[in-house]
Every structure is written in structure tokens, then in C-alpha cells.
Image (cartoon, rainbow, N blue to C red; front, side, top):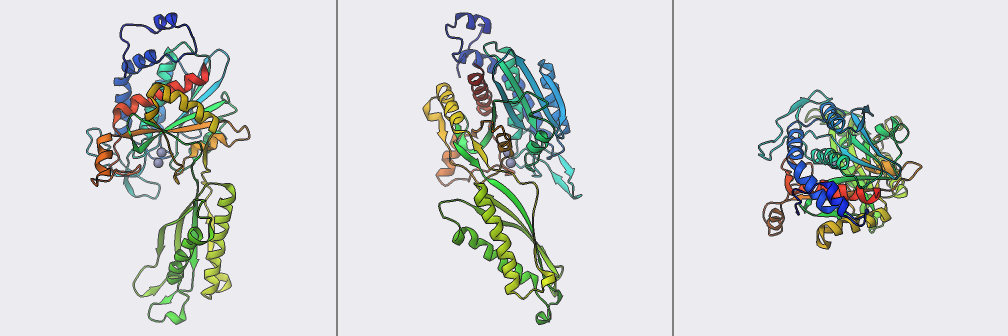
Length: 438
Ligand SMILES: [Zn+2]
Ligand SMILES: [Zn+2]
């Protein structure tokens, strides 16, 4: 990374002939100045993770950091969300989002700043907590970009800094929208976000045009039967066997009913029923995650699940009053669709600062991300979330040569390399914002 030491931003801008030109050397100098502080913030957040809906201290820290910079701050927006507004004359409004929540994972990275946090979850069980999805990187970059933008003078417009809670529950973005994100605060013309990527080398960026993360639905199914003694199955209607048949039948949705060129996932992630070897229980609970890419396909897959669950129960001779129930949870996360024109515009910006080879086109994933909600209000605001490489390149080579597989996001072993990941996050997001604010 280039360094510009001893030359202040004012001097640089006086020498610039073209105000809209990217002040790369100035941004690099700002990042070098800021990096120790941002790395320390990152390590602090990593050591002190908070579960979804409990991001109280993280939100307070972000609010404090933004206030120190002179940014107008509103906290407790949609839970522990924070909104910072930085105005500089008239012009475009750009929203930059970072999410703050961590996961119930026991960290095993062995890092000196690894989390040792344990807490009691909402079900009363003791769990460990870890930033296994890199939201600590996102939050640190958000604060860092705010710092840099307050010091740069070559832009005008408004920047909204959004620190979002409860992304992992798919609830935070909606809660902030419900709490007036686009009405109480300046409504953005563009929304930007970054997410660490556990496969891309640190120092690279991935971009996906159009749908990038999937529709995510959680479905609860209760298969009901008529319980009794395990030795007299003919006196019962066994919900365990029916659950097993139903699970297999559900696998036929993707393999036999869907167009093979249109991706979908139906995963039964949880099955619970029964108490003892010799008792046929009255019911079995299933929990499913369903992933699709369009509204139409989503509806078709959900309808097919209901049809199959009911059909299997009828085939098993379950009495009318013991028919299964299928409940859709209301934490639906819709598809994240990156605006193609915005992606193309940012690709030019990123290639200019990094070179062609460091900016990759990425295929969509079946993962979920509630940032997409910001682009689905009636205003249809163009949004883009880009992927930030976070893995040591030699580790990637090793894994390709048959070595240890790379830990994925949400793994207890996922350890993004702070440098250059954080530096590139700061550089890329600053450059993206400046391009929209020039
Ligand atoms: Zn995650
Ligand atoms: Zn995430």
C-alpha cells in the first residue's frame, strides 16, 4: 500500500487539478494513521462479542466513537441499532451499513484476543459467544470509514452510518426500518455494505450482480400421530416413521419438482420426538430452512412442502384431527439483490484502486443476509454488498493441495487476518462512498 507521509490532505488537494479524482494517496495516509486504532477496536469487539438482540455494549461503543468524530448520532434505533449522520452540503445521500451481532459458538482459533465470553441464551442454556461471521470487522470498518470521511474534504452530500443489530436472526434491518430508518433520518440514494468472505484471499474483493444471497424461510412442522406402546405398533399411528418418510419425501422437491437450473434448498436441520425406546410418541417436531431466489419459487416450494407433509399423513392413515401442522416463522429474510448498475460502477472503482486481478466476480450463495431489505422498500434504493477477502493466501493454496480445509463463516475456527483485511475494508468502502459523493 502506498504511503504518503508528511503531506497533509489540504496540500494534496491544492495540487489536484480534478476534484473528482480519487485521492488515493490521501486515503492511504489516513488508513495508515488510523490503522492501529481500528485494529485495537477490532480486537476489543472480537474479545467482547454479544449475541443477536443483545448488542448493547457494541452499540454504545459505536455511538461513542461516532460522537467523538462529531457525527450526529441516534442510538437504540430498532433495538441496539445506531444511526450516525454526517452532512456536508447538498448532494447524494449514501448509507453505509455494518452489522454488530455475534453467534453462539465456542471460539477455538487460539488467537490471543479470542473470545472467552459465555452467557445464558434465551432458552436458559449456557453458551459461548464468538464473532464467527466477521461482524466485528464490519463494525470496525464502519467506524474507520466515518473517521476518514470526517477528515476528507473532497466530497459533498450526506453519509448515514448504520450499525445494525440482530442480522443473524434476520430481524435487525426490519426493526430499524420499522423504527424510522428511512423517515426519521436522511433517506439514502444508495446503500453500501461489506461482508467478510471465508474463501477469498485477504486483499481481494468479490462482487455479485443481482441476487447475491437467497430468500431464507424457517419452517416448523409438527408431525402428529397416535402414541402408545413400542411393542404394539398396530395400536398406534407412529409419528416417528411418518417423520422419516416425510423427510425423505421433502428431498424430492429440489431433485424432482424444481427446474434443475433454478437453485433451491430444503434442509431439515432439526428433528425431535419421543422420550424412550419403547414408547411411540404422539408427535415429532421438524425444523427446516428453505432457500430460494425468487418470490415465485419461494411460494412454490413452501406450497409443495405443505402438500407433501399433508399427503404423507393421509397416506399413513392419520386421523383428521391429528393432521400435521406447517408453520412459517415470521423472520423471513428476503433475497439480497445487488443493483447491477451500482455493482458495475463499484467494480470500476475497485479495479482502479486494486488492479483487475484483485476484483473477482462471485456467484450468488444460498446464504441469507437481511441487508437486502434496505433495497426492497417502495423506493427501491440501489444497494450493494461486496465481499471482502479475509483469508491468508497460503492457507487457501494449502487447502487446494489437500491440506486442512478452510473454516467457513460461523465456524469456531474462522479467523480473518486483520491485516490487510481491515485496511482493504477501509479503503474499498471509503473509495466506494467517495465515488458516489463526488
Ligand atoms: Zn452469519
Ligand atoms: Zn454475517
